[in-house]
Image 1 (cartoon, each protein chain N blue to C red):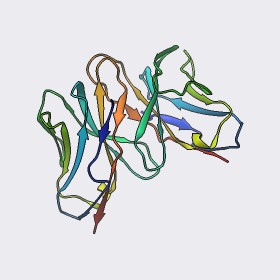
Image 2 (cartoon, rainbow over the protein chains, first blue to last red):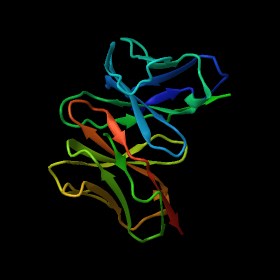
Image 3 (spheres, rainbow over the protein chains, first blue to last red):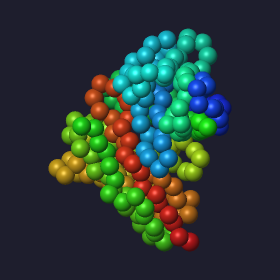
Image 4 (cartoon, chains in turn purple, yellow):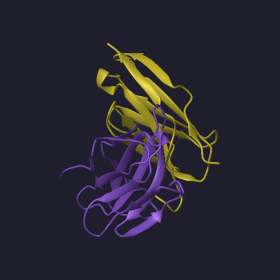
Length: 116
Length: 112
C-alpha cells in the first residue's frame, strides 16, 4: 500500500508564475490536509478537504492560494503569482475519515517550492 | 490564542542514554496530542499520541506524558539510537476539526 504521494518533490518558479502542487492520498483515504513549513519552523495548517468539498480553509492566505480535491484525481494546491515569501516546504497529509476522535494523519514527503 | 511551543530547540544526547523532549501548550480545550518525528528532507512521521483524558501512554521505546495542570507534554525515548536523530514536533488537535497545530520543533542529535 503506497503512502501519500506528492509531486513534484522540488519546484522552482520565478516571481509572478504559478505553482501547482499535487497530492495523492493513501488508498482508501478521503480526507486531505495541506500544511506549509518555513525553514526551521513547525508545520502550519492551511486547508482541509474531502472529496469535492473544502471543510476548513482557516489557514489559507486570502489571496493567490486555492485548493481542490476533485472526485477523480489528486488534490491540488495552487499558488498564483508566487512571491519569494511563498518559498517553503508544502506537506500533504491524508486520513481515512473524520469523527470527533483523532484519526491519524499520514504525511507525504513534501514539495519544496523555491521562488527566485 | 493558538500556541504549542517547545522549551529546547536542540537536544544532544549520547547513544544509549534516555532522551526527554518537552512541549508546552496553551489551550486546555485540546483533546489529542501527537508527537511526530521528521528526518531531514522527509515528511513528519507519527510516533505516538495521547488523549487529553490520559496521563501516560507507552509505545515501543517511547513514552508520552501529559500534565494538564501545567499544560505540559513530554516525549521520552529510551536507549536513544543514532537513528533517532531528527526533529521532533508536538502537535495538538482541538475540537470539531481534524487539523493539527504544531509546535516549533526540537532537534535531537544523538552522539555515537
